Structure formats: structure tokens, C-alpha cells
Image 1 (tube, rainbow, N blue to C red):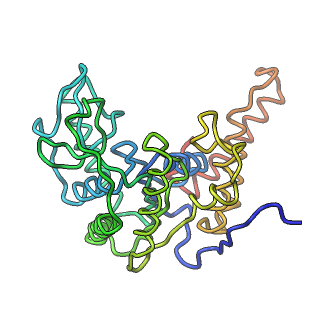
Image 2 (tube, helix red, strand yellow):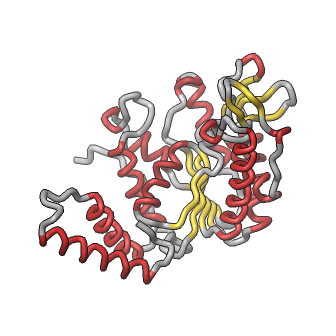
Image 3 (tube, one colour):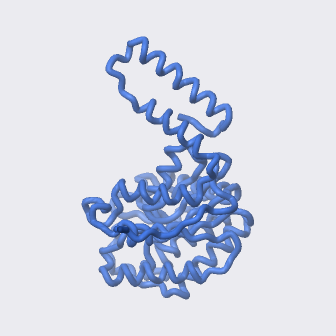
Length: 314
């Protein structure tokens, strides 16, 4: 008896991720869940240099500005609640110093440009099609920074609007990188604050738009569908009943690994995992001969791995 519907997945035939790959991850908070896994296993990656970006227009702005090497200035930031903010970035970049904020924004633009140029894989996770428009200058914002809502209009991007935004993202990437695999996915995190029906409507617009894109080296990974169909039980949610819990994150990561991680990289991942667990190990007796021997063997493993892959550090 089968008690679960399984989404059929096949390993990607070309350009899988290995330890020579450079991965850029942009988008909703689910990007950071996958990014933590890539970090743990020591893959080369850049995650959300402008912080979490939930909707297509925010990601489009980031990539457009990064490709154009935009220089941020005082005109691009605002002061609110004793901090300086930028409407293009998440509040985690906000700063009490306007000079530091501008420097950090420009550093992020520079690193994003370089990483997009050098990337082999760009993973974009879309969270919502609901967007906020700043009424003062009629522009979409990535984050409202707790500024009064009467200064914004809330809108749902149509499927066509979403397609146009995603095509702009793809064209900007392709202008400086013609070979990277672009992997779209829809976040399994439900945006219930928008409303239950509104969340479903939003996700459907994102999914419909992605599947109407026509471009080489474009791929879709069904993280949303895995959560909704294979893990359709509240035991796979965190306490807020909105975000996937660690079991669900691990499950979706394993599915991603099956599709996108090269088999030859799996042995290296096992070695990295052994080292990571060794570094987290707390000995009963730190001064024992057995523990010193354990540390010596761990150091040998690290050096062997770093000889093979110079970018790996612990």
C-alpha cells in the first residue's frame, strides 16, 4: 500500500553541481535554507547579497543594478526609525550610518556582478507575486522597512507581468553570462498574511509564469510541489504552521541533491560531513591522548581536502 504520492524526479543530465561549480542563490527565505546546506558541504556559493527578496520585481531590480554596476548614493537611501534603509534591499542591510549602508550596497552590487559573471548555476526562488509600490515615485520596493502603509499601494502581479519580470532577469543574466544554468523554484513557505486565497492566487501566478518561459538552460525544481504533495502534513511544518521544519528542509534538500548534485561530489560531501561533525564533537577529556589523535586525523583530512579544493575552509 502506498501512503504517499511521489513526484517523479530525474537527475539532471548536464551541468550538475560539483566542487568546481559557482552557485548564486537569490530570492525568498527558502533560498537560505538550501544555501545553508551548500555552505555546510563547502560548495562555492553567494546567497542573497541584498538580503531576502520575496518577489520577482525585487530580484529583477537587484540583477539589473548588479549587471549595470549601479553606484548607490545618498539619493537611494532613506532615514526612518533611527536607521538608514534602501528600498532595494532587505532590512538586514539597514544601518545607523548612511556611509556604511552606501558602502555595503555598492560592495554587494560589485560582488553580485562578479558572481553572476562567474557562476555556473543561478538558483532563483520566488516567494510571492504580491508587490508594494512606493506612491511617491511609482517604483516597486523590495522591503517597506515598517514605513506607514499609506505610502504604498499593494498589487498582485499578473501572470504576464511576472513573465516580463522573469524575462528581464534572464536577459540581464545572459548579457554577462551565457552558459550558467538558471534554476527557478517557488518557495514552499505560505504567505498567509496576504490571506489564504490570496496566497494560492499568488503562487499560481508564479508557477504559471515560470512554465511559460522559453529559454535555453532554464530549469524548474519543484520545491513547492514537494511540500504540498509529498509532505502534505502539518508535522512537516515549524511551530508557526507556515514555514517548513528541519525535517522538510532536509527532505527537499535530498531531492535537490538527487537532481542537481553530481554523483562524484557525493564522496567529497561525505568527507566534508565527517570533518564538520568532528569539529562539532565535544570530548569528555580534551587532554586525553585519544582526543589528540582524533584531532590529528581530523587535521590530515582537512589538509587533504584543501589540497584538492583550495576554496574550502573550516
